[in-house]
Image 1 (cartoon, each protein chain N blue to C red):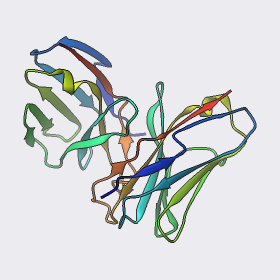
Image 2: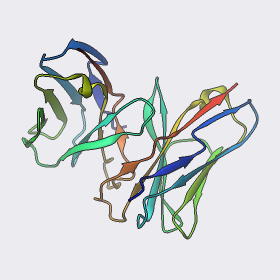
Image 3: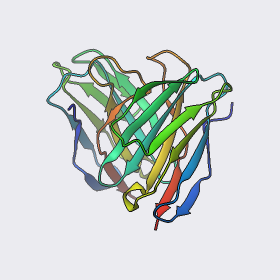
Image 4: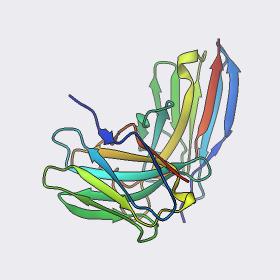
Length: 113
Length: 114
């Protein structure tokens, strides 16, 4: 069974641009979560989607947004990029229930210049 | 704000040594999880502890959940180079939250030299 896949794996952008990251969950998984990982702050929760609806949201500015499609694939978008948005963005999927195990993808490394 | 603090931040040891890493909070967690993350990869779940005082073993790794469910520890016996990685503890926030919405500690970066 294929794992969680994220594209692209690496991305370089400049300040002020916007970026869209993609995540394909494990087949049959309906929940997708996004996290930002930085050396200073560690892993921080961005948002969680389940059946195309945002189920939970972390404490990030409105520049960070996401969506989930009917096939459970998810995208996250960051507008007006700032230098501090440079990070590893991780996507994780779970089957459905709140107690299901979460499986992480390899992440997208975003560098903002 | 619920926080998970991990210590030490960095640990460099020789193969064969034992080690313990800690995960502490001033808040009660309904459960805590431990993950290992290797460079270029996402975190992989090692274990979930749910009951206060619970001890779980995974080969040479022993996980303990504190009686008050505010802290946890991970002990590795006879560490091997393959144990090298970033060890993260995580738990669901108070008031619900799911496994898809976790609070993470900043991690302990372990390096085991042959």
